[in-house]
Structure formats: structure tokens, C-alpha cells
Length: 61
Image (cartoon, rainbow, N blue to C red):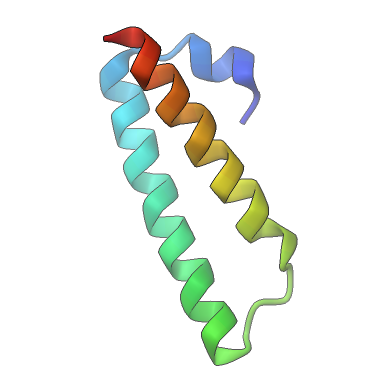
């Protein structure tokens, strides 16, 4: 998701998006462990998006 789109979300929406990203990150980690992860770049994308959301949540408070 683009940074502009993330900035338009409220704090509650960002928190729910963060939860979804954490679930996706867990799923990707499990796929990697079992050898079923075809797109390894997805892990990096999710990790960076989590960092973006956490940064925005820090500035919202």
C-alpha cells in the first residue's frame, strides 16, 4: 500500500491494518519454513509496510 493511502487512514484503521500485516507476515514465515514460499520478496514488502504503519502510528498519538 502506498504511503499516501496509509496517511489517509485513521489510527483505528492503521491498527487493524497492522494486525492484518502481522498475520500475513506469520503466514509467509510458515511458508518459508515448509519450503512453500514462491515469492521470497513478499517477506521484505510486508516487513517494510509494518514499519511504515508503526511510524505513522507513532506520529498520530
